[in-house]
Image (cartoon, rainbow, N blue to C red):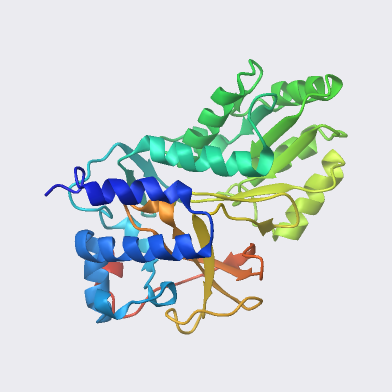
Length: 336
């Protein structure tokens, strides 16, 4: 039977955004694990390479996480599903990029709209200005897809995206300040630094949000240094952040100091850097694993290349990235 028409798949899909606590999250995560162990060829091969049987996994703590690098070389998708959208990651020249196949665009929209609203309120009355040069200059960016939809739903004629028009953007920000208009400027760090250097200003009604990564345009900065520069340039008490990636359909949001909060259908766990299958308690630093229940069509269980620390309230901090991360013995990781 096609997975597309399977009533069980439809039922699981409907449960994702109804998760309202730990019990519901764990139950759905286990149901999705067994679904992917059975119907996701890439995940099934991954489990076989590990010598793990799905019958051995009886709790969320025992679920193996698929290394994120697999998205660079494999078609990660449940059997029977088509490709509604194709998102691709950015990459340096010559590097292999990731591909994320998304059969249900509305599922992605539901995820980012509801998680954004839960942190920042409704989009009506909010002006969104996007400064995303490296993303706007290529096709297939999930971030651009999200931001464009957020902008559209503000119903503000002055909301919009900017490529290299720093002066025009600065003028809109100044006008928004004069109008006491609640505004969000979301941008890639190197572009926000360019804006800060060219047009520093005092902001009282505008939030600055960075999306992480210099994309090779500037030397990498630690978060504290980046945020300090932006706070001083714009006279704001904090810099907001978005944590997301091509291979996920959910985002975590930070209102300051780099501490991210997940929506109810997303959870971060921390793995031991020396043993990728051992999970660490709160307060210990290690590799970031993500359970994204919205990712149910591709894979909800992703071992990222980020380093971080989780706190007792479920929030987390990103501390850096692995220089080289692999899971030895897994032939899925070999790129040809």
